[in-house]
Image 1: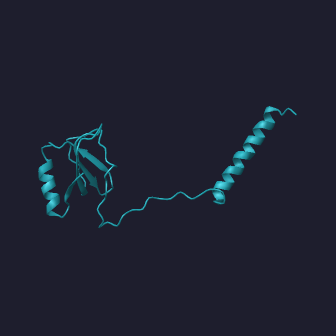
Image 2: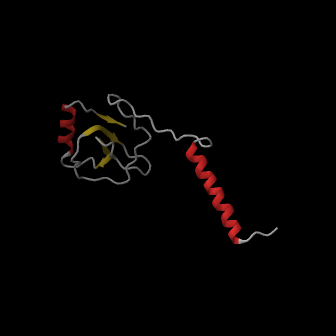
Image 3: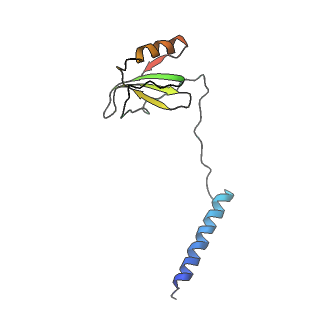
Length: 116
Protein backbone atom coordinates (compact mmCIF):
# COMPACT_ATOMS: atom_id res chain seq x y z
CA UNK A 1 0.00 0.00 0.00
CA UNK A 2 1.47 3.33 -1.04
CA UNK A 3 0.18 6.52 0.63
CA UNK A 4 0.15 9.91 -1.00
CA UNK A 5 2.01 12.90 0.41
CA UNK A 6 -1.28 14.36 1.60
CA UNK A 7 -2.02 11.16 3.54
CA UNK A 8 1.43 11.28 5.17
CA UNK A 9 0.89 14.89 6.20
CA UNK A 10 -2.51 13.99 7.67
CA UNK A 11 -1.04 11.10 9.66
CA UNK A 12 1.84 13.23 10.98
CA UNK A 13 -0.50 16.11 11.86
CA UNK A 14 -2.80 13.72 13.71
CA UNK A 15 0.12 12.22 15.64
CA UNK A 16 1.37 15.68 16.64
CA UNK A 17 -2.12 16.71 17.73
CA UNK A 18 -2.41 13.55 19.83
CA UNK A 19 0.95 14.27 21.51
CA UNK A 20 -0.06 17.86 22.16
CA UNK A 21 -3.35 16.81 23.76
CA UNK A 22 -1.63 14.16 25.87
CA UNK A 23 0.95 16.63 27.18
CA UNK A 24 -1.75 19.20 27.97
CA UNK A 25 -3.78 16.69 29.97
CA UNK A 26 -0.77 15.58 32.00
CA UNK A 27 -1.79 11.92 31.77
CA UNK A 28 1.27 10.82 29.82
CA UNK A 29 4.02 13.17 30.90
CA UNK A 30 5.73 13.72 34.23
CA UNK A 31 5.42 17.25 35.59
CA UNK A 32 8.59 19.33 35.53
CA UNK A 33 10.03 19.76 39.00
CA UNK A 34 11.02 23.28 39.92
CA UNK A 35 14.19 23.80 41.94
CA UNK A 36 13.75 24.19 45.66
CA UNK A 37 14.55 27.70 46.80
CA UNK A 38 16.24 27.79 50.20
CA UNK A 39 14.78 30.06 52.87
CA UNK A 40 16.16 33.60 52.76
CA UNK A 41 18.09 32.99 55.97
CA UNK A 42 19.89 29.96 54.52
CA UNK A 43 23.21 30.74 52.81
CA UNK A 44 23.54 29.64 49.21
CA UNK A 45 25.98 26.76 48.75
CA UNK A 46 27.70 27.45 45.45
CA UNK A 47 30.52 24.91 45.64
CA UNK A 48 30.91 23.28 42.27
CA UNK A 49 28.41 25.64 40.65
CA UNK A 50 30.41 28.86 40.27
CA UNK A 51 32.74 29.27 37.35
CA UNK A 52 33.57 32.75 36.12
CA UNK A 53 34.91 32.77 32.59
CA UNK A 54 34.61 36.57 32.33
CA UNK A 55 35.16 39.09 35.08
CA UNK A 56 34.50 42.81 35.34
CA UNK A 57 35.80 45.73 37.35
CA UNK A 58 32.39 47.48 37.27
CA UNK A 59 30.48 47.75 40.53
CA UNK A 60 26.94 46.33 40.45
CA UNK A 61 24.42 49.03 41.40
CA UNK A 62 21.99 46.69 43.16
CA UNK A 63 21.63 45.22 46.65
CA UNK A 64 23.99 42.29 47.23
CA UNK A 65 22.85 39.32 49.34
CA UNK A 66 25.85 36.97 49.14
CA UNK A 67 29.57 37.22 48.58
CA UNK A 68 32.11 34.51 47.70
CA UNK A 69 35.85 34.44 47.04
CA UNK A 70 36.44 31.93 44.25
CA UNK A 71 39.91 30.55 43.50
CA UNK A 72 41.17 29.85 39.99
CA UNK A 73 40.35 26.28 39.04
CA UNK A 74 40.81 24.72 35.61
CA UNK A 75 39.43 27.29 33.12
CA UNK A 76 37.53 29.30 35.77
CA UNK A 77 38.99 32.67 36.75
CA UNK A 78 39.88 33.82 40.25
CA UNK A 79 37.12 36.24 41.22
CA UNK A 80 34.84 37.66 43.85
CA UNK A 81 31.28 36.56 43.17
CA UNK A 82 28.46 38.81 44.32
CA UNK A 83 24.88 37.54 44.25
CA UNK A 84 22.24 40.27 44.01
CA UNK A 85 18.56 40.54 44.99
CA UNK A 86 17.54 38.99 41.67
CA UNK A 87 19.92 36.03 42.22
CA UNK A 88 22.13 37.29 39.41
CA UNK A 89 25.79 36.36 39.75
CA UNK A 90 28.35 39.15 39.26
CA UNK A 91 31.93 37.97 38.63
CA UNK A 92 34.22 40.73 39.88
CA UNK A 93 37.97 41.14 39.36
CA UNK A 94 39.58 40.65 42.80
CA UNK A 95 41.57 43.88 42.40
CA UNK A 96 38.68 46.14 41.40
CA UNK A 97 39.37 49.48 43.14
CA UNK A 98 35.94 49.74 44.83
CA UNK A 99 35.72 46.11 45.98
CA UNK A 100 37.33 46.27 49.43
CA UNK A 101 35.06 49.17 50.49
CA UNK A 102 31.98 47.30 49.20
CA UNK A 103 32.96 44.13 51.07
CA UNK A 104 33.41 46.19 54.25
CA UNK A 105 29.91 47.70 53.80
CA UNK A 106 28.47 44.23 53.19
CA UNK A 107 30.05 42.91 56.38
CA UNK A 108 28.63 45.87 58.32
CA UNK A 109 25.12 44.80 57.32
CA UNK A 110 25.77 41.12 58.09
CA UNK A 111 26.74 39.74 54.68
CA UNK A 112 29.91 37.68 55.16
CA UNK A 113 32.13 36.84 52.20
CA UNK A 114 32.90 33.12 52.14
CA UNK A 115 35.92 31.45 50.55
CA UNK A 116 35.10 28.71 48.02
